[in-house]
Image (tube, rainbow, N blue to C red; front, top):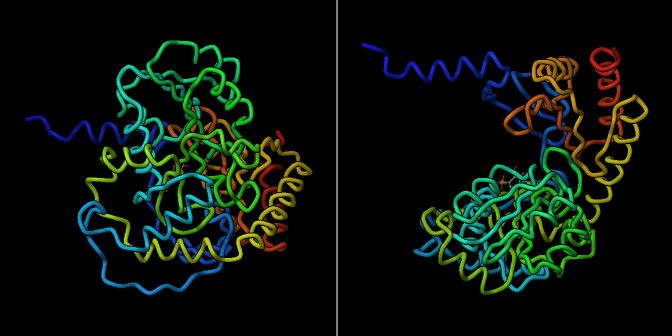
Length: 376
Ligand SMILES: Cc1ncc(COP(=O)(O)O)c(C=O)c1O
């Protein structure tokens, strides 16, 4: 008889042959560093961009229930009020993760007969949520306003444009000034997932729309508390009626346990910390590293804290990452399906944890890597 799980091994083998196989590793993060297999490395993979110093909190009994049953305590209200203010929106709603916020929110407001325009580089959680909605989905070319304008003329009962604020794998900004001009003219609903811009970009870290001065034109924000804020969880911020509908329809909100309230308290404390000081340190670190990379010869197209070094071939990206690792720097190669095939890259995320010396050391290693892999 045929071994019934044969197809699983075939699939795994195919991933290995195409250099797309992923393996878990056990790590321990501490500030600017990470320890892997007892080796201490500089950490260029963290999404804890602001590096807010560790916050002490008390862990009480977990509520272990969905928020609509018995998992909703006062800390939620406090944090949601703060987040609504932070985004200048009427209301907000916390989900267990940013991934679940996308899944639940978009699928709650878009439905059959609607049209969704989604940027081709949008995050997997946006892609999945669009599919869950039953709306017609059209992908527009990355940040291409002509393509967006043309495709948004197609019919749909309600029309949505969904984009990231700072793109997670390229570090570039969505052209929110132009996007909102188009959506305003064509009466479309604008949804921005600002997981990577939130708390980091714009005045007081209010996010990418604030940087473009179009905050008032955004209909719904989706974001994560697990990146710039260095906490855990996801949320949306929007009008009262949209949030109300999400409470009533989001499966990833209704049918799952609430985020433990100690994490909600943790976010509250971190929001109230001196984020401005950390933002300044981060801004300087980004400037220093980008400048150094350009001096070496790297092409740097991002002007944010996410800096991709495009390698192309998947195997070459793995070799590049291993070279950095052996020289004490951790920056993981990002491959398909996270990015398109043959656009593998080292995604450097700059954090405020890095000191001047850490950045100099990083540049030394990246210089060696450039001479070895890129300067051929
Ligand atoms: C653009 C974007 N949206 C949403 C998420 C999911 O956020 P979380 O890690 O809170 O689930 C991510 C995470 O990488 C992301 O990059």
